[in-house]
Amino acid sequence: MSRKRRRSVVVRKKTDEGTPTGVSAGDASPECFEAPTLRQLTGSVLETNLCFTPGLEMVCQELVNFLVAALGEDVTQRRRAPKSVLVSGPAGCGKSSVVWTALARYRRLQLGVRPVVLYLAGDLFADDDLNAYRSLAAQLHRESVRSIEMPWSDSTLMSQLAGSGGFKEAEVARNALPYDTASCIEQIVDNLQALLRIACDRATTPIEPAAGAGISGIVLVIDDFDRFARRTQHIRQQLLYSLFNMLVCDDAAPFVIVGITRRFDAVDLLEKRVRSRFSQVVLYAPPPESAKELQTHLIARLDAHQTSSALSRTKNLVPYVDMLQHALSDDAAVARQISELFHHCRMMRPYLCALTHTLAILSREETCDHAKASAVLLGTLPLYVLRRDIRQRLSSLTSTELALLVAHSRVAHRKEQQSASFLEVYDEYSLFVKSSAGIARQSQADSGFLAARRPLTAIDDGSLSARSCALSTSVALRIFERLMEAELLAVAENPSNVSSMKERIPFVQLFPNDVLREVVLKHPDASTSLQRWCKSWLE
Image (cartoon, rainbow, N blue to C red; front, side, top):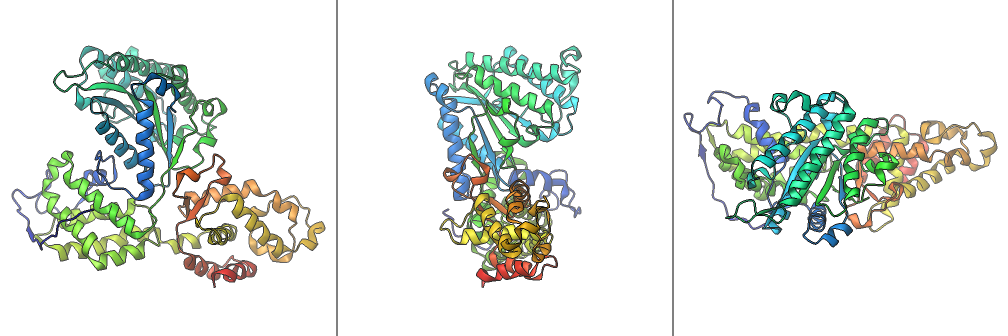
């Protein structure tokens, strides 16, 4: 990223006109405008030039190629292209930003067309609230009626309407809103099909003769996709089935579904009838590989925040944003602190929250310069990042979970990619359990329990058999998944190496080996054999 050389700037705040909208000069609380700033830093930034880390950039490009193929003018190409994709990754790694940036880049590539983007918030349906389904059906009905009565302008093509808040039920006749979930789902599908027919009819018709922009199709973005994919929730699976069935019934229709989820195994949670209609295209959004990559992305985020046309009401923050960019790019103390904090947390959201809080503090200062901005940032970063202290998270694990992490570290160390799949880790873990328990005592331990459920402190007494260890694969896999949810492991960066079987997906660890060794040696539940096994290769 090319950067102009910045001079030392001192910003003096004007109490009469320099305060943010709705904020008094004497108000020391940053919450009144910190929320919108946080949404702009961490939310849906529609900037085509947003700079991602290499792993996220690869995912973004894959999404652009997916949209070009599925929404293109060639009907034969649309029939062959996949119509659904799932973006998976840990919380705060940048999944939503990648999706919305890919949509912005697609719009820039296709200058003559615009997709209709509908956003469905999965957390609104977490409790199977009937009002959520009724609201979704009503909003889609309102949009379809509005589309018939008036032409679509370019400003409405990126509207996030489905599942968004602030909708008034009185806008749609009460008899148009069913009072049972099944009827709501039917109406949701009917209204989507109506919108799709309108999009197809106007696909070759300009929206505005002067602009010459047409409608290329519909993109349905489903956030928190895994909330719909739980097998115990039949109603939510029925909604997914109805939506995916639309893709199968007319494979030439310009309609695609993009899911966003934290769970890497969300596809496995789908019912068979739903999974058979999914394209089986899963893109994994990896966390940054280094602190330098993280710094580059933070600077790019601030640059997008500074140049976005949607930030006209926060223009007074522009000089403070410039100071933070200077601190991130040129201040050695800030770079050193981020490098140290990177061992505790590689997710980007805590760092973005710290930047937001820093902007709120700087905007309250009477005078501010680059040194002041760096000092405030140095004090704010630990408050957000150290909440996720890696030593505390590792110390809260059981001895079995620690043993699986040690096994992963041993296998990954032997490979060039520094990654390991669950099957490789479990084989390594099994060898450790067998050597600790003693294979010679197999006949004394046919008790039928699972090894992964028993603390490793009980292994030293030799009461475990090789056969019982082999039976604990499913339990160990669930433990392995919990380690991912705790953001201790993540899918490897290169999506092309990802297997369709979750047991064979390569994972990388998100913490240094010396921290793992330190925790294992001090952990009160770690057995002597586990400590010796950990020290045998880390030293």
